[in-house]
Image (tube, rainbow, N blue to C red):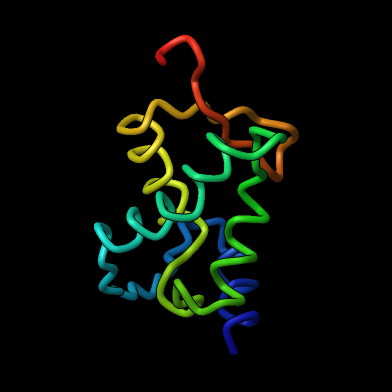
Length: 109
């Protein structure tokens, strides 16, 4: 049905209207930032390899249940990471289009 409507509207040459579903989710941002901080900061300050991939952080947190995969998206996690990086003097470096690393900003400390 949806496909036929799109084909009909395209055939008419008119503007196409798409109904978007808006899903509101409640996320405890402070708790999410605390979970990220508790996991990331000790790893980038103490261990021999002072960088950590964000994909590994999310994988660990989703698998252990520290964050709920149904409610916490990658987008909301990224926004929280931006705030945490600002607060904790962390650098976010892009490795490629799909991932980035987190490390301590040594110039700030």
